[in-house]
Amino acid sequence: MRMKTYRAANSTAAFAKVKADLGEDAVILSNTTVTDNGTKCCEIVAAVDSTPTVSSSSQQTGLQTKAEVVEDALQNTVGWQQEWSQIKGQIMQLMKPQMDPAQLTPKQNLAMQYMEREEVNDKVLAKIFCDLRSDKNRSIVTVLDTLLGTKKFSAKNMTKTFHAFAGPGGSGKTSTLVRLALKEKKENPKARICLATADGGRGKGRLILKHYAELSGLAFREIITREDFLHLKKEANQFDRIFIDLPGLSGTTTLEEWGALYGFSGSEDLEYHLVLNPYYSQVQFEKFLEKYKSEQLASVIWTKLDEACTFGSILNMAFASGLPVSALSYGSGLKNSLAPATNEMIWRLLFMRKLPGGDIQQ
Ligand SMILES: Nc1nc2c(ncn2[C@@H]2O[C@H](COP(=O)(O)OP(=O)(O)OP(=O)(O)O)[C@@H](O)[C@H]2O)c(=O)[nH]1
Ligand SMILES: [Mg+2]
Image 1 (cartoon, helix red, strand yellow):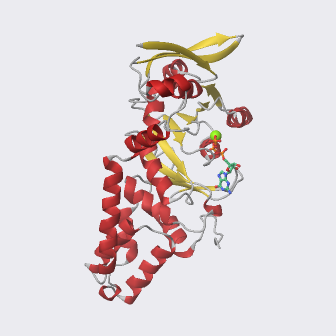
Image 2 (tube, rainbow, N blue to C red; image 1 turned 90 degrees about the vertical axis):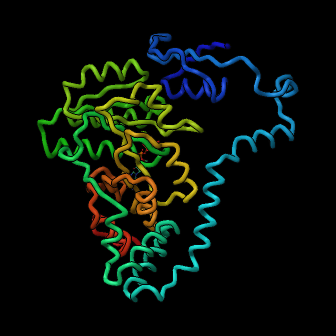
Image 3 (cartoon, rainbow, N blue to C red; image 1 turned 135 degrees about the vertical axis):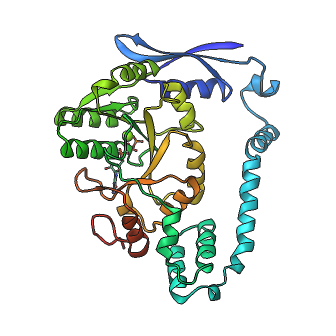
């Protein structure tokens, strides 16, 4: 067993070093906050089985031969998941010719065309088609209501104390958190709200949170390591709600791994909200489903609706994940740019491209 110590600004950055150096099989032995030259930082001790995994030639030269590169790639990518996804794709191709428009009423066909225009994927289209075909009088909205749920992001609906905002880099996590916190403070000035950042490595997000916390009389905390989170948990009874800003997770790091590193996993009073934009590709959405899957994931928040051309991904994601949509954001400013989600808002987006603020998206 090989043991090494890593230091970085926070656990996310230290963990990235561990992975880059020791690989995916590294085990974290300790994760603590230490002081280095007067600045708080994270120290991780990690270990890995010392059996070499690469050939001796590549160990000596630090380079892999062509054959080794191909071997590595094949080993890592051809998993059963990919095969299954290919099989599903082929089934969908076989299904398509059977989705005969003659089996639907003209109104139902028109609704199907709208869904295709919005880039609703084949799996969802097949489900909608089958449901409509079984009942000529059935309206598309009643079918869509079974595929997508909403849960308005509000103090009443979101009863947990800790709400952490996860998602790809730049998706709008920090802005969403600030908007939701300010909205709650406005609705209930007595609410004891804390803004916490676990994204210390990226200066901008941290400064924005600190700024708005100071400006609006909210508490501010920094989570550099697991110890800081444990400490925040201990003082949680001072707050009605704690909003936590997470970093965009790089490379192969998953939310579950990240959550385990910081002690979020298994915290019953904590839930995650996944912040996404509608214009990622289908392949990216499939990756995100894997990367961000967690039993603590409670909702999806869609941002940058004002920058999207189609909105089918909202339905695709709801169908694939089973998660409700909790909020919609449609502008870069912090004011008048976010609405707690309702089904009607999403149907207006899909059929009329009408944003929650009332503008029509071209
Ligand atoms: N047009 C538009 N811009 C938005 C929206 N939401 C956020 N933004 C902008 O998107 C940019 C990134 O937003 P952030 O909130 O910093 O995103 P983030 O996910 O925290 O980014 P990282 O912390 O870097 O991963 C900022 O310039 C925001 O103003 C939106 O609904 N519409
Ligand atoms: Mg951020």
